[in-house]
Amino acid sequence: MNKKKMILLFLFAFILSSCVKQHEQNEVKYFTSKHEALQYGMNEVRGEVIDQWTMENETFIFYKEIDDGGVSVSSISHSSEGYYWFNGIASMICHQCYFQYTSEYQNTIPIIAGKIENPNVKSVEVENAAGHAQTLNVQKGYYIEWNTKLGANYKVTKELQ
Image (cartoon, rainbow, N blue to C red; front, side, top):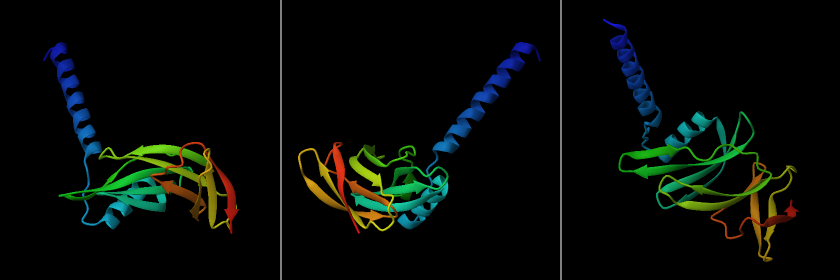
């Protein structure tokens, strides 16, 4: 076999193996319950659940990543084949933040979240620029408001014990 054919054969094999690897990475794993999908997802991201919120056929998961201490949001969706984990946003260090999460079904959820250093705090009062105040529960050192109407310009005004 001449050199050209060998090179072409090698390139073809390389491209084919890349396609197989890409297909394996994008393969969806289905589960019979939401709980199984959640356990799978937490094992995949090495995370600890802080809060969950459900809208339509999706459950949104706010979690802390064990490796880097950052927080993230992912979701569990349901189809006729079962429940499955959908990787969300990259881990971020979030002391006080506003972000939007777009799910696999293209639901965009505005979220505010933040970390509270004092372990005795059970809830926080937050207020936006228009003066609208709201009390949020603190779970595992974090507060979160799903589908918030407060917007990006908010501040924590009180920590309640």
